[in-house]
Image (cartoon, rainbow, N blue to C red):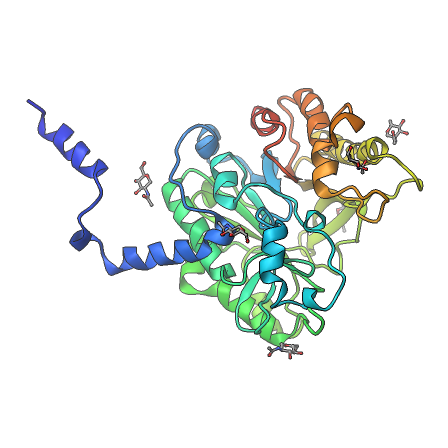
Length: 383
Ligand SMILES: *[C@@H]1O[C@H](CO)[C@@H](O)[C@H](O)[C@H]1NC(C)=O
Ligand SMILES: *[C@@H]1O[C@H](CO)[C@@H](O)[C@H](O)[C@H]1NC(C)=O
Ligand SMILES: *[C@@H]1O[C@H](CO)[C@@H](O)[C@H](O)[C@H]1NC(C)=O
Ligand SMILES: *[C@@H]1O[C@H](CO)[C@@H](O)[C@H](O)[C@H]1NC(C)=O
Ligand SMILES: *[C@@H]1O[C@H](CO)[C@@H](O)[C@H](O)[C@H]1NC(C)=O
Ligand SMILES: *[C@@H]1O[C@H](CO)[C@@H](O)[C@H](O)[C@H]1NC(C)=O
């Protein structure tokens, strides 16, 4: 005979009868479905990489943690088919179109990244071509016409409900050059403000301002990294946002060493490497360009292990060299180009380097094509 608890457990595993679902759960299902082109199809996974923060004490300061992230996190499905499908509604119809590899920096959707251990995400928003919703772009490349920032935030909220031990960092940045007349105007800024201060957002975003707290204060929630200014709105709007302000005006373009004060009052500073297009001698090979980016990445990570233990270190391992002939797409820089790059790309080269940093603080590190090689994230999480 099966005991009552086993029967109950089996019933729980069966699909619920339709009449027992609430309208709220149907509504959530719809939102997650709408988010799919960016978020991916929701998969409820548990397991060590999906819940790795269980191993850290509540009192751990967030700036002491090693957080793997992804650069241009929403670009995973930007293939030729996607570019062709969306070309008609963007300015791509009027200009010479860079190939999709120029814009694509990931191969896996956000839900896979979450379940595989990624905790920091780089989200680039702008108005959709009708100026009514915030959607995701990389320059002119529109990633989905339908999945909005609001939809995707619900994906993160659901995932946090399912993984309450974890905490996330969302970097939001206004993406320019998305269309001929697009601008970071008051309407865009108000839309963003509303998305980040809605009732549901106030529940899921850590409400602390201008400083990082502890893991315990942030579990089940999101720390907002504001790579945007609300400079077309009154100060009231900026002052009522939570999170950390990394003003684009202070974020030096293409710099291997940005020192950015995000809290003037308490002199709190972040150390950032975002040398995304290494300046290398003309005619440099892919191997050489990868070497320069590897240099910038590892020298910044080494500083993170040795200096300013209570400050944020934020290293971007992502890069491209698309002006080169032949061009190095983000994928070539991250993963190499077959036999022409015998040591692989930045990612392969980082694995043995990271193995030497066991026990040390490396901070937040943002990757392109984070799933390659397969031991990159496992190595990172074992530090
Ligand atoms: C990925 O892009 C292809 C081509 O545009 C599209 O058919 C497919 O639905 C997209 N995948 C998702 C999950 O949206
Ligand atoms: C995910 O799984 C957990 C337990 O494994 C369960 O409590 C939760 O309701 C599930 N979430 C969804 C959306 O099915
Ligand atoms: C969207 O806004 C831009 C900038 O204000 C404007 O030039 C453009 O005409 C608008 N597009 C639509 C479809 O309203
Ligand atoms: C602020 O912090 C920086 C870096 O830690 C330090 O060099 C500087 O002297 C500090 N400034 C003040 C006013 O304390
Ligand atoms: C990278 O760093 C090494 C060691 O500091 C240096 O010798 C080399 O010139 C740098 N650049 C390249 C392309 O190797
Ligand atoms: C990558 O490899 C392909 C095929 O071997 C080659 O045509 C291309 O020029 C290489 N790209 C770079 C940046 O080295």
